[in-house]
Figure 1 (cartoon, helix red, strand yellow):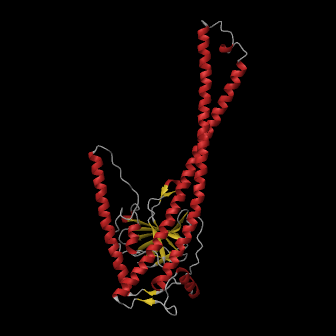
Figure 2: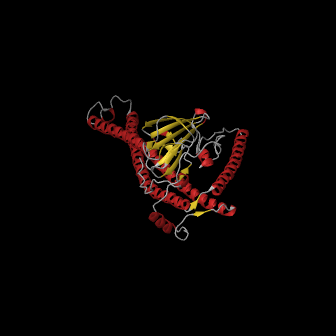
Figure 3: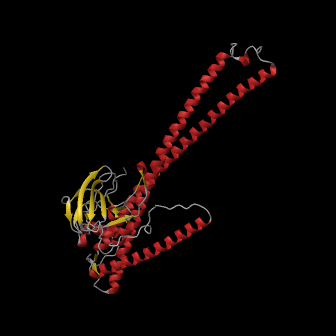
Length: 398
């Protein structure tokens, strides 16, 4: 389990469900981050002016993008740690195997040496005893050469396995050193991600997100979704062309199941019917398919936020709360559209299992289960089937 983050964000909420900092903390953070404040520290509205709304929306979206980039770097670092953990386990098993083989070979050589020594003075050891039974001296010389050659082969094999043991031990030491460095990198990136979320909170607290700004933010998200769709088409065309080229050349083709924003299009209701699963200030990352311990791969999108930030139903439906070792406090939401959603690592629930409306709070962000940094693990299962990459779904509405 990764080290726990030490958030200092309060749980009070401001407009549109976004938490605010105490006044003194806001001033300190604003100075530290070099953010512009107005006069006595009052918030800045867009004044419903088109250009002002666009500028405010751009600044807010830029801060959100920075928070998302920081979250991506953080969870990429977590995946690197998980990968190293898997590799270390494999190397430890490899080392145990070669050490066992070396021990068996050493025991065999010791037994062979003792046998040769004890037999050297007896007539039963033909090559060093009476050669009267041999047809001639040439036959004796050949048998002696075979015995010596066999010993040399055994010693060469033993020397080779010792080299393997030493190389595997060095490999394991290097991997453990890399793991220590990765842990340190993760801790630093965790601080940076927290700082970006605090900065986002401060920027949004300085602005009244009125209808004009919210409309502009939605317009920017729609434009981004259009660009993502265009990029997905280009990527798909390139993959088809590469597959066709490989096929015409007689080679075999393989398909990748890895994640990425363009690998899975958002659901039909994303951006219109679906809402963001987490309120407040947050950063999220595309971690689909990242390796996890036990041979698992990551099936969700991770959304980092302060403990206690509200978790909400992305659409109306039936919610069922449960708990498990990996997910901790978890929830399944069977949406009225037929899509199912999975939430994990909640600190606690709100209400009980049953019908919920869209936007209704169902819990609080936390770090229960196999989680270090407080975050929401969110999955999307279209038609109630297998999970698909939820990153483009979230990107379209958050």
